[in-house]
Length: 431
Image (cartoon, rainbow, N blue to C red; front, side, top):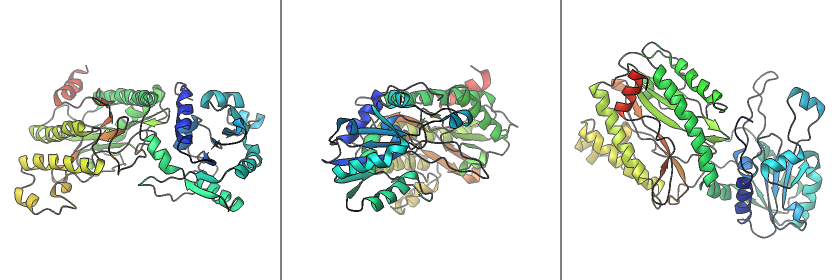
């Protein structure tokens, strides 16, 4: 693996906190993700199931974790099943984890070969009454592809139809939404790598370069610092392209006088960063660009202050909308009549700022977490207000990654320039 080893106490603690949520005589099962096919005999680069990683730290396919706190035998209370390696696999793919290595990574003392799973699992199911099965219950999940967890749920219900089945996802969403100190440090590492990439791009941007050339600067810096790459498809959008919220082509030429929006993040140890900055292609903002940019920056700074324990995401978005409405009125982009007659379900400002301000971030870019509860210490959110004026060919979004603290928040991306003076200075002096 490219990233530094993680203290297995993090995963041991995560399992303990999960197990405390289970009723008596309950067990839970978590499966690795599949290695997905591309075409012909090709495969897509493996990405681990984030719930399994959260509980075990194992970054290997064909892995199963079983948690059964009330198992009669102490060694059955945590069992990790991994694929037994062989000479052929070692020669063609590289050796897999052996049992001692799996214990070292995860902290799970009882590691078994995957070939023993059905036999051992049958013994456990005789003792269990309730079974917690995992599924992807993210609000935005499309779930068009059947996963190992999906197939396992079908198999388990067929083999053991009289057990009571429960959802593991609500517990996982609750736990993963509160970041542990070690998780925050890993996220900071991801953001530090991203900061280096933004700095590299900032010095590279000039009229005439292609958007994909800037994308290449990011991937270069990610790779040389131990990141496997982008944590989502990057948006490198110059000029009017920045008004397309999910612009992914990254194929246009950057032109003098335009702004360029960079929405780019990286992975590190399975944790994501997610940052957006806007820079002037020529190295200098025009007066109009400054006016619009500073309006978004004021909204973002005020929005950062409102990410506090006790606030609630839906209410928070309304509050940020009011901030943006004031800025749009001051800019004469909106008038008071439009605001007065606006549809409360789709306020007037939404014409120019149509997306949300924040989402959870962590092991997934759009991480799991409840939108119906109040913000807590340890929550990690993005903060990303934006302003989009297609008629002027200008799209502006400013995004940081924030961990909520008791007295003050921790901005993981504060070292990535967003003040006009600092941006222009770096673009023109290289310092």
